[in-house]
Length: 252
Ligand code: RET
Image (cartoon, rainbow, N blue to C red; front, side, top):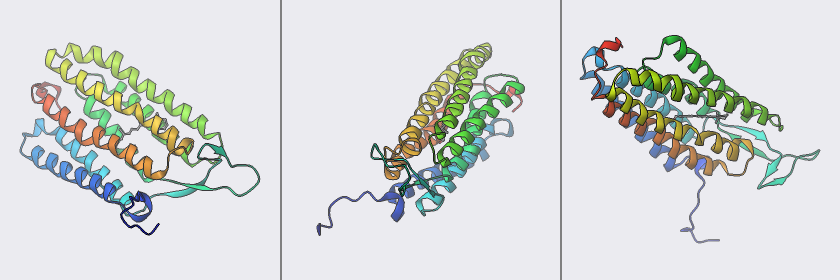
């Protein structure tokens, strides 16, 4: 086809405007949070700085992926739904491990944003972050495993995620309610957004790194939209809802 106007979605191999666009949003909102935080008093800037750190990390991850760096080819057994494994030659799929490095840093910080205003004891927060790390690292290992054993790692990751959700909705919600009506309201909004979005990540994983049903380009769009909602949008909603809460007594 010589028609140059035919749409070509060749995102991940040619470096992409989509990934650069996500990079720009992450970098701009990150800088914004930094400047906003510097204008706050010391006791009130915790969540601005946490957001800035999350967005700075995401910026670097997207810089890497937009530059076509941070992926490695892994042999796959399935291609477009058909089994192609066996003794012959395997096709490969790019596994974008850069995003797991991002998530290892950013998901614990996102949980801190939520749990530091829940009034939960640090011991509970540490255990929750430990299971969050189990979730991400098993996802990374599973993505790099070339056989169906990858689904074993995926299962460990899902169990860990449901433990995190349990802490958020049972002891976390109870504790936040004790801090007062404004805290409870802010906590409920942020917890609902966080859990609703996080639940979609293993679905994307299953379609992309897990079963190779969607191409790396489709994966970039799926995770890209999720990352924009889970990082800059979540951070803004959280920072604005916290403005009504007096958390100076929490000594953050
Ligand atoms: C994996 C695969 C293993 C099972 C589960 C997963 C969940 C990942 C999540 C990622 C969240 C990322 C965020 C990034 C910020 O933008 C690792 C995909 C459960 C929940 C919020």
